[in-house]
Length: 358
Image (tube, one colour):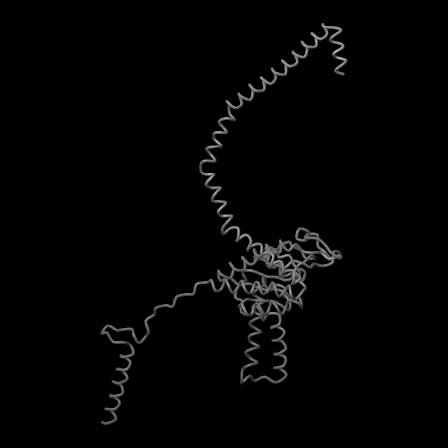
């Protein structure tokens, strides 16, 4: 190709001159473009961007640079280790939930679509609950329990299913709360007048059965004992309840639809354990998890019991009244009441003695 141009230029000098002119013009155009681009860049530097660069330099030399150092020190110090500790605690807590079987739901054919947001996935045709949500919602529910008890509120534990009835009764008795674990009678909350009448009847039966001079025949005592036991199974856990509870805790909402309906009607907040086949409607503080396994139920009950005990210990004890004892109260002459009584007895005794001598 080079030899071709050499031969062409040697044979035709005019062609070479035209080629040189054309090449020079293209180089000039390219140079002009570069000059224009350089001028535009200079204008940009002389304008807003240059001053913006100065402001950024001042920004780095000022407060933000010190703040950056402060953040680095925090990352190297306490916050970093606190984050590690929180992660370890989270892993440990989730491990406890896994060991208790909280993550196991029901078969996929028995699920409630309203529980979809609490379900992590499925395995072997069984739904798996999302334990991260379970953990967060459990903390919210326990905080509500703590605040209720700390404000001298009362909690009603409700579960009539066999797996949970003994556990909730034990927790309620140990923490001085109320419970229903045999059968929910219609109107237990909304028709309290009738229920309180049944409680009075139960207490009367108890008093009659323990009295010495009862005046009843054996047959009458047997009938009274049967009636008392029947009432005690249903009402024994709420015998000391003077008003509606401040919070209701339910295990298995499918069993306790009446309790939920009455609590909603009276505006009582509800904490409930929700399995994959449960209905989360009208539940103020849901806890997604297994509501059938005994280990899971024991875990829930232990957490609530511990929270209630902590809340009770945080309540300030009432200071004893500085009442003045009776014997230290002074009369107008500076004598105690006890001294005055003693003087009266001595005067009466001396008077009686004189009358006897006379």
